[in-house]
Length: 129
Picture 1 (cartoon, rainbow, N blue to C red):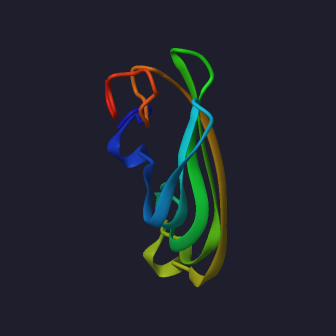
Picture 2: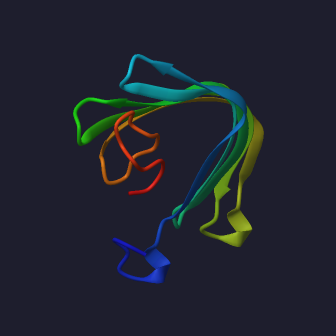
């Protein structure tokens, strides 16, 4: 548990994204990606509340090689799901709320060639270096 002084102070967090139906695409020699329908699941539970949701979203995940050793990875998703949230501090005062939620996410990250997501045209590795 990084950054937690004890198990009681730990932040529980799980996020899962999976491509359900889609196709690969490429733009030029340096950009590759997949687009389609994704399944999403998130669970977040700091010590005071819990939030969980499942969703279905349309979107894309791509990687653009900016240089020989540097890649920019982008995820853009939007859809609908079902979520629940509530307090967990005191069992007598727990207050959960459920309902339909809108999901939108945009993530942009950089990576070195040591951890590529997709094969660069002149690289010899496909997934992990």
